Image (tube, rainbow over all chains, first blue to last red):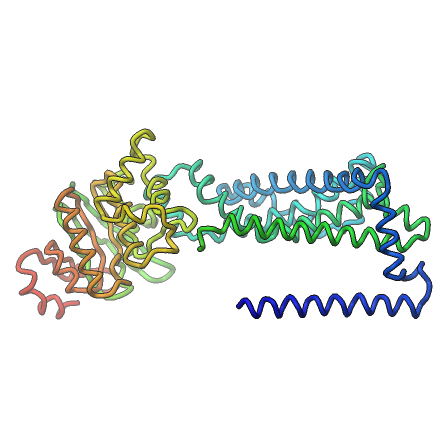
Length: 251
Length: 222
């Protein structure tokens, strides 16, 4: 198993090196940094971004919006997910809203948010609107998969609704949440950045990408992509550590 | 305790399981219901427990608070330890200040105190079924329903756990309705044996004396 894991990591590393090499090769062939910058130019751009006075403020602003929209979406999804499982009324109430939320294109949401809210709130609203239906549906499916036999057991032993939520529903949601945390959080992060590109709040990764685009600084755009990838990588490590803690009962 | 089932009607889609079915349980004994697979034995337990709705009829003399249930599967919550599982099931029946002690007491009684901090995934089938039995005895009920609880256990373990269960029952008298398809198991309990025929269920015989001698007679009518 250990041997296989190392082998798999080595192959992934070789694949990364291959694509980085391919990127550099294409950049050399095209020889136009507006289309594709060379690796050295992107590294220089990253250095410049790091040295910027507001670097941390930019990152934290995007992160703050992402966390806020994610937490709001998660809380709403959990409450409505439990309500829809316990009371069918909420299931039917949420059905059209959820279908609408899943099908509406992100750009339509961005445009409407800009009409209804100010530019600072747009990334948050869009992040919430995109993330909520995914979390709600996932949590609902997770709760629906709870074994009916276990629910029958709670009927026989007259387990209160409060205890059922605390000891059964919440843990199930927690396990589901851990399995999708990185993918959904990354999606919210990307959506918030898209919202920032169009909303142009004062601080935000999206605003910076738009600024680099206006200045035809493709190296700057690539540099921000690298920073986003690093952030996603850190999130994945955090998720892995949390999973080990939460799934201790399987060992 | 006297449980009375009157004019019970239950069907699934086009299949009639019970048609004007009547049965009484009145002994603080082990009442074994025996019959072929799928003849409606488990359905009757679920009807008594209120887990399955009926079309017509009446089940009287028992309410939810009187019932414990030893299920065929352990029905333990995987992410809770043995003790946490029992505390969740017994919380309603004991004050918070004594719940911990009560759970420890029943764990000791069933002989599984040592595994109280283990998760179900770390337990063998026999251990899980002991926890299932502990949960049923922990509830101060008058009736224990048992749906083939020993089915998945090997022969030796099965009779060890049955002996343990009979000892518990000697200490705390309760009515038991046990569903099984194993006649030897039913005879071993030395209670009442009720033989179910095929659907719609008819009672083919009730045996309560000299059970060992009745074995062939029961086998003939099953």
